[in-house]
Length: 62
Image (tube, rainbow, N blue to C red; front, side, top):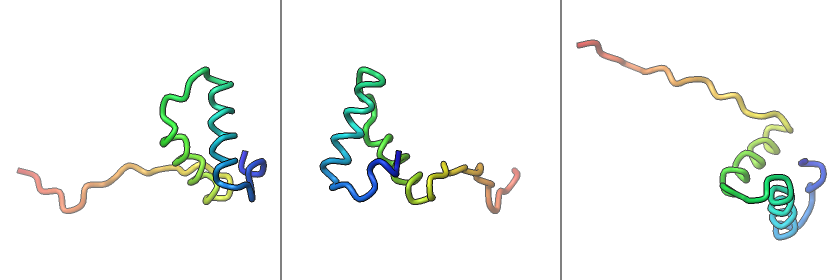
């Protein structure tokens, strides 16, 4: 998807991605979340980020 929108004006990018989701799913439930994923995927050179679970630091047992 990133190649399709590379270099596009922001307004065009937002409109196209919104319409694509609307066409595929009939509604756009959480557009902000979709944009976060699209942007981080683009910044990570097309690879989805894999988050590691947090490890509690200085955990004290009672």
